[in-house]
Length: 374
Length: 77
Image (cartoon, rainbow over all chains, first blue to last red):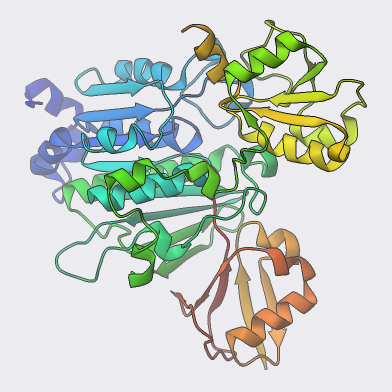
């Protein structure tokens, strides 16, 4: 995008910085950055990237806004509940800065669309909330040689790093697999839904991700290349770790685009087991056959509310204590995107043993709704 | 001799603190053994060990002036 007089007035407080200047602004306006996930991390990084004048910003997220998001995903308001995060974020951010291009993708990032999407951007920002996506994003960035600004939170602590990037001809680029070569199993590490998170923390970490991306684009300061920063919001301690590339971890990344597109990241992260998962079509057949108990395992206030079929509602955290005995032989559990319901299916198998057949609706209610409209 | 260990993320739920002191250990293998004995839940926990701010993958000598950190993976966003 060509910068003109008006846009420079918008950015004058940062172009006044001699380290940044009009040259820095021009670099930002030329930059293309993709933010994956418009949640706690994404809402924060997006606001500052848009405000700073990054010329093209992509937002991908297949989730919808829920009431329990609002304590940390401060872009949205109660009017947005039930609406697409990607679409609403793009619309709200467009009002903040109409001079840049904002592209929104209301879809899930998968091995099928990742490489094509990433190739249109210079820098990738990871604001996702699960290991399957994180490893997939990391591997795609390694294959495409794209800098990845990583951010993640756990309870009161957050991490930031820049992967897959070298400045000058220093040491080899480090990627996430040099830190944790293999994904943990699904139940080894709790996510925000289970462990909880204070709203300010992803705000701080997401803002740091935006700061690192701006430094990377404009070439100022010392970006967190090959360094992992951990911030503790309770005691304000900052811990920095030097990272080095390991030859053997390169072998864990799929060899090429074809191998990448055949990798099942959900399975690698222990989130999928063929034993439990059924697709929308099979689910509809089971419903027609009857003798079926269907359970929503999302929190009580989550949208969309399901009225299309009869079901009971037991949030994941209450399954073990509150799930009723049932005369039905088959139980199908569902959630928003199919992750929590998979855990629920495993819990229920532990509870009922072989006396029931238990399934999880793959892709969750969002995918089922999409399949219904085909 | 006591070595100061800094813990991160959900590991602090296991130890009840972000800092623990482990006595009479001289290398990281001994440290892991001792920690698992003191905090059995650490057995199943996934984490990396950093000594003096560098990730180690082989048994590494430590002493009371070492900066030892145990970091689990974070996934939240």
